[in-house]
Image (cartoon, rainbow, N blue to C red; front, side, top):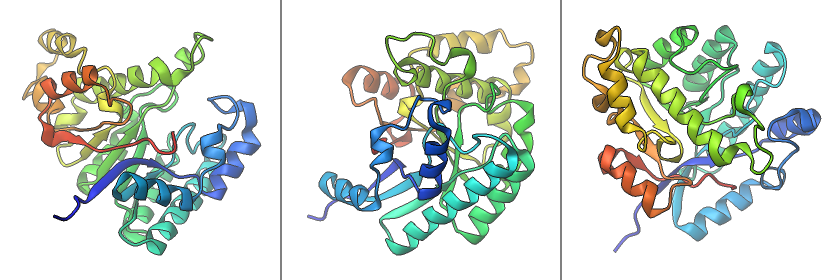
Length: 279
């Protein structure tokens, strides 16, 4: 009996350019400081962990705080350097690594250029986005050119949570990942669904982290909101139709309670494997 070909869609890497940028930013980067899992990352450790867990392939992505740590020009350069580093890893370890390319958003022009370079030249497997950029979630009209291009290319889009400035560090008892990451994933899913962006861009293959955040638990509120919409034509096939087209990884939801809830909202065909390595 052969082993299944397990693909980890939620697997972070830390190229030297990103490591240098985070070290330079220091405590100005949320989360504060440079966490040990990122500081100690290496391709060899990734492969060792994959082998131990029976993972054949992993799609590499950049984790929080993201690429845009200052001005647009620096973000464009950092995105390019990280994407080229990821492409080299994929070339050096064929069938072990793929790449969800980073974009220098909210720089729209820079992001469009990087989409073309990453998908056409580097042959990336998809694009990595964050749940919000400067308190604008992915259904916001400012991202319409990005979504239109990703839809045209029928791209796979991996969406990772990030804190929004209004809610970052609200409670010192725990870090933002404990509650805010799941909440912000739900915010961006709601933004895409209720703005009509999801129904307009049916060719995008969405993957949302952490079981969709709190979306499965709040499904009744989503259904009620759909009935109250001023422009129901934005959601012609209903809430569940859109939610059940998306994919959701299982990182951080390997617990019977959230997994049961997720499986009651979406079919198991839409649930994909993810580890959130190196965390």
